[in-house]
Image (tube, rainbow, N blue to C red):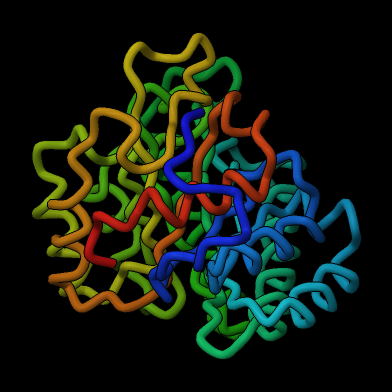
Length: 296
């Protein structure tokens, strides 16, 4: 990683976009208390969290730490993984998603004013032994129908995240914004929205149309920024980088989202072994620097 910001304390800190959020995955090895610390020290006003980190300290402790930090809460990742056929495993998955909704509501209530109760859904890949992609996608629709009323009652938006098609088999049978919006369409936008993630969507020739549609329908629940690297990492999950460090022309995507009227937080979410090996405060400062060329 080559950071774009200094770790010295003598120079005044450059201005940071007030809408910037540090997704805790970007500083994966920091641990939850340190995530809050480095975001604040870097001048970042919000955080997106992962359930595993919350579970490590316990929800009650996480809520108290977030409240003490003075930071906004922008999203919780993740729910989903409910593409399996009806049975014990699917019931357990849906129950876990209800717990995730409850966790998200508690964290959003603890965050600073402007926090968003958004639960990111990575819907799941193909069930073991199955080659029936339409059935897997139908299972996603059925799960949303079951979970949407619960989420709405809790004040939480379920945000369907399309993932790059390389993950269709193992992580998400939803690959495009159009597919995600079609799944969300039957439901109140307060209950079901979508995630616009530049890393997963930049390749799609219809992404601009999808973003415009998401804006018209009031479905953009979360906006996440990350760049894509070349050469591709040996572990494709770790092929992201900070904005400006890869091949994606991010400015048109940011402009397209802005044109919809979206005013929520903008999360930088990066999975990258070199970034994870770097001091978390340095990463947080580099994150803030990496988006300064974008009109957030």
